[in-house]
Image (cartoon, rainbow, N blue to C red; front, side, top):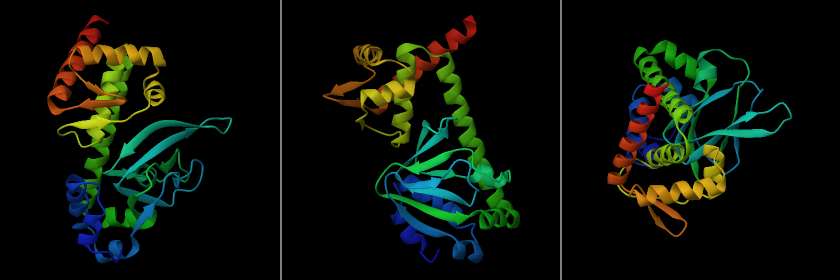
Amino acid sequence: MPDSREVICKSCENRNTAEWISALYDLMDDNVKGNAALVKKHSGDMLIKSGERCEAVYFLLKGTAKIYKELPDGILYEIASVRAPCLMGETEAITDEEFSRGTVCTESDDAQLIYMPKEVFLHWLHSSNKALFSITRLIIYKNFSQQNKDRAMLFSHGYQRLAYRLLSYYEDMGGRGKVCLNIPRERLSEDTGLNIRSISRALNRLEEQGLITRQGRLIVVDGEQADKMKLSVYSELNEQKRQL
């Protein structure tokens, strides 16, 4: 990775991502830096293919990527969408799985990533306790966040499920200030399991409660609305769990 810290940070989505990769860059020795590469990918480019050998770990610096599960009939089913900053392929590398469990493709046309061969990644963790601690903490946070999302979706119903998904989108976009979400109703339906009519009813309810603002097809959420939505969603989820 001949690129300097400045070049890498300029390739990042935002300041938060730049600080994230800069802290990891400080822990990389010359061997790691020399064998990693800053790469640019376009929408639909495949980074990891299900069933193929695990060859590398990716540090997503800019853009988004989709994670798919391959069904028995060969159809790819989208199970998640991730935004920078994010680490991908690290679980298979650390657990020494020979083959990948999912397919990962970049979603945006200007995605920027650091490509690091699996062997280099593992050598880095073996040779640096600080790197091992940092990556372990990232993995724990990533799994904990996903666990919370799965649990919330399990207990939520109707408009709660949509509200929780909108909060996830808001946080993916930086989680600060006003965010305009241009998300097709079909995508919201796929992500929540609600039909289009239920999505429309749920959006109306959220707007009536002042938790979102709609501008045509855009769904606008500001910081105050996000905080109120969190309080509303989690209060109702906790009440439902107590009743079980």
